[in-house]
Amino acid sequence: ARTYVVTGSASGIGATTAQILRDRGEKVIGIDLRNADVEADLSTVQGRVDAAARATKLANGTIDAVIACAGISAPVPATISVNYFGVVELLDGLLPALKTSDAPRVAVVSSMASLQPNSPEMVEAALAGDESTAREIAQNLADQDPQIGYLAYPSSKRALSRWVRRASISDDYAGNGIPLNAVAPGTVLTPMTAELLSTPEGAKMVDANVPMPLNYHQPPESIANLLIWLTSVENTHLAGQVIYDDGGADATLRGDDI
Ligand code: NAI
Image (cartoon, rainbow, N blue to C red; front, side, top):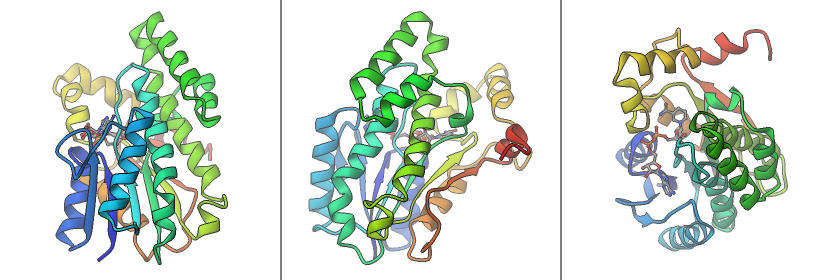
């Protein structure tokens, strides 16, 4: 069996991924705020450091794959902290244990929203590793108007997708034989979207931003199974990709612009 660390394991895409892996007999170490093997807050530096240390200990020093699903979509500074720094800094902490695996793999969850309007300043601050500036920008936007505050979410995902692009060919990842990729979902039926999709007006708004001509809203399994393949032994050369697993939303919105 392989040892997987799955963040956001208590709900939605992360919970489904963890369950499929466990059913296949793999060892899963879940990280989440509550109801997880490692309970930690990935919005804080200390939470990331603690989570990496405790997961590494539970794995006896060797982690074969990390699947990072934890994320939030609120118009608050915590969104850039969880969705970007909660992935990148946690992975920094888990890298030593990944390096000891025969077939280490990493996959993270970005979003269709990474293509939506965002704050380039917030994206740059994140990629520069400057969490306090990124949070300040998010707070300033939220203070202007909650509608503008929502830019924190697409900004966090744009930064994460770009980080995957860069890091995948670095000494840390390619240099250590670790394929690193992102999956960008469309609209997934999980607790994150349940409230918005519960009214016709909410669903209409979501669908206007994320049109899904193929099979409409997707179950978490549609993302989980791809994350599992990306982190399997079979994936030897797929690296640095942001894979839009989104019912055709990206093809609809970007068209030929690729
Ligand atoms: P969810 O809300 O069902 O699950 C997210 C999990 O992350 C929860 O268990 C939550 O406790 C955990 N989490 C949140 N903040 C945390 C923190 N500070 N520390 C540790 N854990 C924390 O959401 P869902 O839908 O499963 O989302 C998973 C990922 O997929 C997220 O990164 C989300 O941005 C992304 N995504 C979701 C889409 C959707 O339509 N549901 C679309 C595109 C991307």
